[in-house]
Image (tube, rainbow, N blue to C red; front, side, top):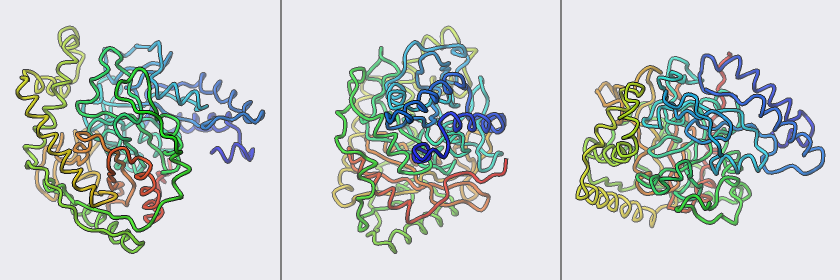
Amino acid sequence: MLHHYRAKMFSPVEAVESLFRRINRLNPELNAFVTLNREAALEQAEVSERNFARGTARPLEGVPVAIKDLTHTKGLRTTFGCLVYKDYIPSRDAAVVKRLKKAGAVIMGKTNTPEFGHKGTTDNRLFGPSKNPWKVSNGTGGSSGGSAAAVAAGFCPLAEGSDGGGSIRIPSSLCGVFGFKPSFGRVPSDDHPDDAFAHSVPFVSHGPIARTVSDAALMFDVIQGASDNDPYSLDPLYLSARQMLNRHKTDYRVGYTLDFGIYEVDAEIRDIFMGVLEKLRRHGAIVVPADVRMGKDLQQYVHFFNRLWMIGLAAGTKELMAEHREELSGTLISMIHRGEGASADEYIEMNRYRSYVWQMFQGLFQKFDVLISPTLAAADYAYDREGPETVNGHRIDPESDWMMTSPINLTGQPACSLPAGFTASGIPVGIQCIARKLNDIGLMQFAEWAQSVLKTNTLSSLNY
């Protein structure tokens, strides 16, 4: 898009107007955007047009971007997907939004999310469910489902998401786009300045969703770096991720796990994943099995992660439960109850297991440059469901048993979901790529190389 602006093939105003026409036509069915920023976006586009004319264009000048409805946007409604906040207008921008604006991005609006991002599918009582652009009877995943759907539907080239258990990677896989969860601390998280330490349990990261690795790297370069409002945020990288992309190697040492030793993986996804491994080998990668040992079976692991996450949820929603319980969804209330009553001893024991997972992954990255897996164990579910209900004919818990992403939120390592193919019913399938902590650029280099090997289209071709 920036190339087109510089070549005067079309202007930022023309691009933004065209995208709003597309949104007007398709969004009523997809429900990716829940609040539009039309007037301000056109004003931003006009500023961008003048900057191109003056030769003072910034890194994201005139590029349309969507913001998840969990992220504060000054003067633009931010509901957190909750009836209680249906009319809430923040007085400040989150750090990621502030940086996007400073870089010249055009904020198109806010995208759908479940209440407070509490689950891996996207629907809420305020706006209803988002639908998958590739198959509108299906869901988008969550909790950044609106952002992933917006990119897949061609509403915008970039979108912001946040990820505390897979919330960037899950919908990116289901919507056939690239989603990047940076190392914890690379991108500041300051949506709750009165509870600045909360987003470490588990590790939560903001990150880009895009159709290509190169586009995501451009956004990552803009939003990464320390912020005074986030005690965990890291000093900025002094290398540009986008400029480093074409300096990748081909003889990557790739470890793979089909299932982390605990998940049952859908046969179609398994076959697509094994095909990916063969393509990587043919193009020079050294691909061998990784000895991933989670130390728990699936039921034990899911109980552990849910309990860890729900303890913080319960602690942070006491006032809401006391004053607005009737306005909250049943699934959110259920999760809050499951997080109540934690003891200090239980929390310490949780950290011991979390430390075990950390050490296990450190051992793997002494052997491998990258670890890959399917992003999801299953992909086919209706938009009005909580997730897939069976895998290979076996019943699973739709709330948890198909999302293979949360272990990386225990460790804070960078991870992404890269489009890898499609099921017979037309649902995209992603592979999850993981690198050692702080090796964000190395992971993006691998992802760009793998993207060139896999050659998967990342824009929905539905004829709306």
